[in-house]
Image (cartoon, rainbow, N blue to C red; front, side, top):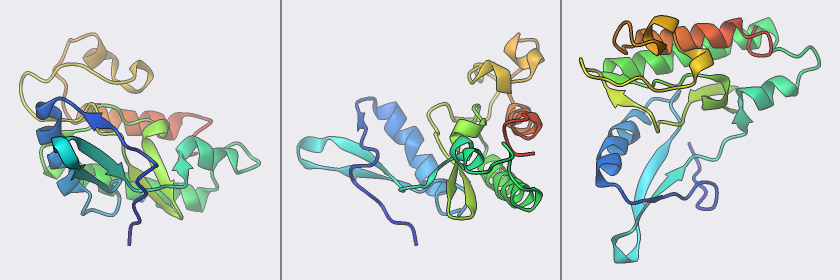
Length: 166
């Protein structure tokens, strides 16, 4: 069961469009490979986001190991978790747009996708957003539209990054 900690991530949300959009991501949290979040309303109608307290991100986990990368069995396990999380996200017609080690969080021995600030619904007019080193060149140069291919490319970059998973 996920534990929530009020102090860990309280963000005041002032844009209602983001609240609506973030509500879709809260629905995703039912999947165990997506970071658990919930929206809380306090007095005066101010809304806050409460996030699951996690051990750290993928970079933190990698720094714990002497070799500078994760052991193969842990890499395989995390890869399975991340791809399951992405499949769940994409089945809901959402594109994360910023898959990178800093947005993959670790909770015990489970890897979870988080930071849904750039997540959008799939469509023909999705704008380019994300971290350039983890986006396909043709999308970054606006040659082709932004699709789930960007998330898959980002995952491939995470795997290829020598300071990352493998």
